[in-house]
Image (tube, rainbow, N blue to C red):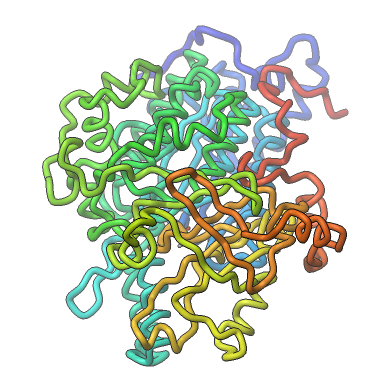
Length: 594
Ligand SMILES: CC(C)(O)[C@@H](O)C(=O)O
């Protein structure tokens, strides 16, 4: 056990608890903390006060393991000489939060900034798990810029059903199709869903949760090997303890997010995301974290740094296995080891371990080549996001690592038209409209159609719904057509295997080109030139632009209204734009309150 009675620096919490200039205020600040048993001597001992952001609760099941892990974090903090103070994060639960969990990324961000700025906290442990809890907390840590470390909660154990791996999220999308095809009944569908989620933890697939935790580690914000440890494993509790110890040292040395979240760190995150077959939600979240860190990466970075990177990880939805095998194969450090050997990383950069990423990755080669492939013999080549633009939007991405052989054969391999396809648009205004009409025979949907959804973006829904991986009509599924091309201004689940064109910006509700597409228009996608256009005459388009954009549903709560008024487009991360100039606010102490 190491304690440090003579702190090398004065902490911001001492301005509350030990401030000779405001001795009149000290009593007020101290007294109520003592009512749960902590003593004035402890609070005035010059030890750092370490916040633990508690993201787990009964309505955040993916993060609920943190209710347990926080005890080990506290042990680590105490043993290293800090004082722990745990407090809640606004809950974010992806599966359940209506109309979207997205609006809560920015709300949790906002709430955490206020807590970290307004209370006597010197450094903070960010407890991450479900999709948006990771970017929300890292964004807030950047805005406040006090020492911070990520502790992932970890994925669930692998799910199994009838002798086969059943990955969370992915099992739902497959099950829906089997239900539509009449292969299974409702009861069996529910059994598959339950089997895919066998323990505490977040998605055991490389959905958005595993992706964002992997990227937090790739950024250098967590201890090496943290993200992939399954939630119930003993190493998870041990990692919690080590994370608690480490944050005290980061507090002493005043190592802040601004020292770690550099441009190189974000470019490495883009590279790692491609190699793991990461979620399409990584695009807005990386962008949001970078912008809150004051880093300019630009939309072209996805093509420039990510597109050529091969898929190395054989994990659902782009591959076969689930989280337990990934962890045993070496987890994120083993992926990064491959990338580092291939010269694809910028790993001479500081991380929360106190040393560089390059040093963290030493001797981390994978021990399981069925799960983590060598860089020179990958699962797929050119696995990063493909960026498209045209008269429908200025920016959208396509996840190439999930393009199936069947989809490739049907749309991308036509002799003389390689990588180019044209489809008849069938347009839906929001997911309610899609669910109501997808099986309507009047739409006459066949293999030559593209399903288009609009009004599903940050302003439109609001929050950008995970709806673009629209399933074809039941009749087509029964004929074996499991995927149609899809396009939209919403997002899709990271666990989906649909190669949709999504995150289209600007969205229809902001007057983007999607507002003017009509069912029956021909849409042309050209992956050689990176264009996606509706083949509609300019004169006709000019006429359509005179008409109002499709209406969007009204805000149902005050936050929805505020969110809509402040949010930017997915291309730029869907941030609260007015929040971006606030950076390093933790360096300025807040004014006194009485
Ligand atoms: C599976 C969910 C809820 O859709 C999400 O966690 C994701 O992976 O994007």
